[in-house]
Length: 316
Picture 1 (cartoon, rainbow, N blue to C red):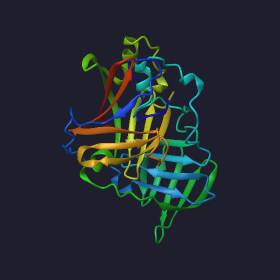
Picture 2: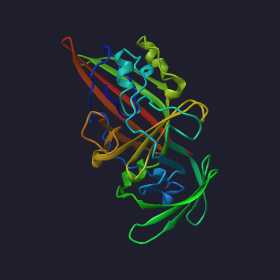
Picture 3: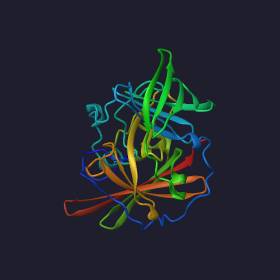
Picture 4: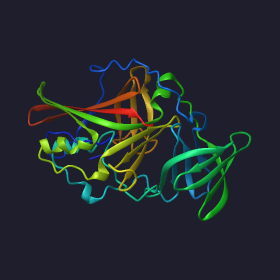
């Protein structure tokens, strides 16, 4: 089964090849929130490193997070066998969507070739990266940059270019920040009749699995925070505790129909045309965001439809 966006698995039959659809019936998706400008909006940028650099990219987000992808990171590593343990449809669908269960888990600030944490600005184009080191961005002409990266191993100056960040609109400005995962709702219809509708706090996600006889997820598989950036990065941080036992996965996104709040994402970075790609619908209210995705499947003459809705609040 291919991976999807946030990862939750739905109740139906073992290992269904669920089809994701996105419709506007439950959400008009037309509201644009009056969210404050993130603190580091003017610093947000993704720098794509030149050949020979130990890093593929270095990105500063508008909410004060950094994401550094090293050259030894494998975007396409296969999920460990231990992950293929959920046999109910609930487990399958929830593990295949927007907040899918992670494939990479590691210790604080370093996630199998991805460095992640918070940063502060200490001067003009100078940044202190928690748990990593410092970076100074030196500007040049014609999109030429050099980044002076200083860690405990020493200092080096690396050539880079700035990635295109042409996603600039009211809806994009609302989306592109760091979000905390607050709660999740799961609905199930069988042959058009609603059979299940329950909302739980994000840290009680396993209550939904228990309803369907599933063993649930480990603490470091439960989504806690997501980030969208204007350069097209989408990232999920998993784990109930701050960095003590966390996992992380990184993806890409683009607007499928911005006027309706519909996003296409892909876990196969930059490739939106294969089975690792899916659709979600976003809406906003105040400082909160809602994302939902829907799956349907025919099985033994019955039609199953499942809708997973995630609720977020802006991270402070």
